[in-house]
Length: 157
Image (cartoon, rainbow, N blue to C red):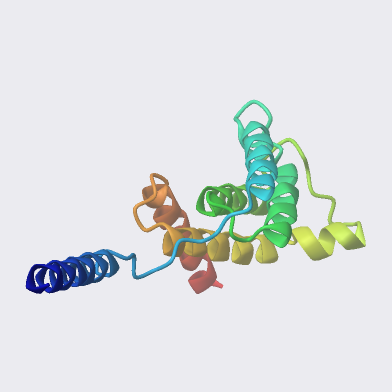
């Protein structure tokens, strides 16, 4: 009878140690629960945006539209920092009237959305958000350089 009691006590002790050690290994910050369907759709939009961003196409308006569509539908996309980089640089280039898709400021919708001052503000905001989400981004150097240039332009005015 004493052996059964000792055995039971040991089992309870082992269980207690196992449970407490397992709970100590929990991740303090829970991972974002990502929807696989939305992830796939957002990844497709990112791929299309990268194609539009290439030096051959330079379709910066298309990149911005893809970004806005994706951000509105799925702001928790796992590669949102990369998308923010594309949107920021596209806004920056459009503010300088670069790219193959020209802005027609005579059209009210285009004037509101693609006014150079607004594009510069958007570019700075997107790139700053990208750096906030991923401070070690491979685009960090270019983003910081662009933000500094945009701040310099703002200071001159």
